[in-house]
Length: 191
Image (tube, rainbow, N blue to C red):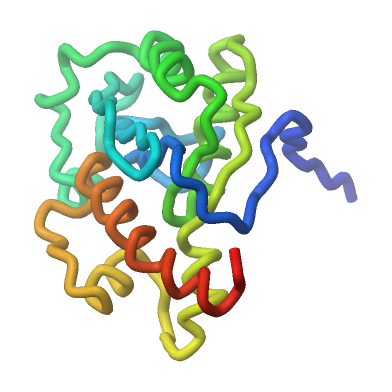
């Protein structure tokens, strides 16, 4: 039996840290498989010394139609992406926006793997930035919670979830969760 793995040898490291400067981001996709599915939206906020200094948000025109399931989940319709830029153009701009900053997201490994693989598909340089996962951090310090999905943490911290499953709203929620987690991380882990 032949087993193949997708080696992302230049992928950055997952950090247990509480940086004050980073790029928090999220993507919306047409499914869970990086080889079969597409990215249809990227949203990001650039944070420097704890303050948001820049924003990146765009829809992406997929090659294949968006399913009704994904439209129902995200609110992104085929009509909305008709005139959106293609993936290679968006990824080039996104990588420029990110620069050498540490990345952050909730369950960010999923997002990074998608971006990494799509960059390679487009014959662009791989994403090598280190990253912080708020899902990982929450599991380390909020041990009393049963679930650590972004919506669960938003509810725990009383953060408005209206408009979730759109990249920029999820980014804003992730940033708020991170800001609420930081003091707990500092007190419990000294990070």
